[in-house]
Length: 242
Length: 346
Image (tube, rainbow over all chains, first blue to last red; front, side, top):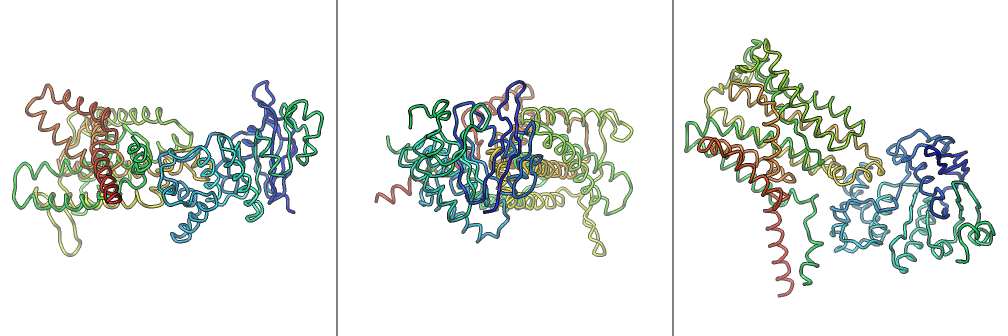
């Protein structure tokens, strides 16, 4: 499988604080990867450096064989890197359909194929009910807003989805559905997904490789079972949870 | 009560709010305005085109503020730049086509200033609050330049601007010296500008502006060049204000530094706030009606009219955030929803 993303010695320092230190990370296209770790481990910082919201202090980011370390958020988005933020960042005062339309509009399709793409996205993220399509986004449930934001990333044809806590605020049923959605996106559309999560059950069910960050460094990497059995990981993060 | 709860998601979206019924109202109003000179003559016919041009100026802010959420206290500066450009060209002795050159110069000069200011401010990611301050400064700068460059502008005394004519090449020239003639030039121009802007708001560009207004971070993360779109709409807005200014100058035969002033700039913001920034027609109506009302009030009560206008402004801000247009849309939406419910129940 082709490599989609690689980081080499990625480091981020905020004044004296080291948020990320020498992270070497690699991900093949069509794969899903979970990033876990205690609060302050540097998970969101890592994601921000990939999306372009933070500039690395050192190191390189290679996406599809191209060095994107110096590119802006906008340029990276145009290369297919889509970011879902920790707090859902959507257009609250517009309807569900208009939200997706704004994502699709970036691609300058003709009207008919744009409308088809909007329908397809809404179906994929389970917001295709006609009443829901016409609702203002601020009236959606927290879980629906998370899905919509993923829908926006599908709408402008992102190939690498960076999902920061996609199941936050979801019911257990919604969480299960989200896991299913993410697996389907990877399998059917060959999308590549990086997920930051705290919900251990969600991560276990996802059956995806896990990278554990601790104090800005990669502590362990591998399948969930291997990582969960690791004594250092248990000591700093999982504790007796698993 | 479940009614309010169920009613909430039916709030009109601001994407579509603009269109519903507004174009029909606009067609009727423009048609009625077209009939006025057939029945009335004199001062009203002279002064109405001025208010139309204030309405056009208000629309330039309505587009900027309503669509993209950018407030500008610099619209008067662009209006004045357009006016002075027209004045300079009309004095240059270019013959019968001078009016066209004047209009194009007015649009180009004001558009260029907006482009330069917008480019540097938006590329640098200047926040909305600071942007407002810069536009305010722009008004002051243009006013001061109009005062200081008196050999060109006439300083405080202002500048005489001749009426333009409509030069039609070999067919001949239509004189606009008659007030009814220029009325029938400015009114259709206003209508064309209104419908063109309405189309712009509904276009891909217009929708992207709404996205920028609603969530800049999301738009960047989707790959939209936010600074480009802000600069573009500010340039269009500035050029339109300059166009209105050029026509105003040639219509009233006079431009003076106060056209660029902070006071006039503030008035434009008040017009649009009262008329309703989310609706182009609201902004247009706000410009025409509030300017006319101010004129009327200042003639009967010069001491108190600004106070009265201030009170109206505060009332609108407190009770009708969407301005008069917003209030109308809310009422009609609510009635529409109620009748939908009743028919559903029946």
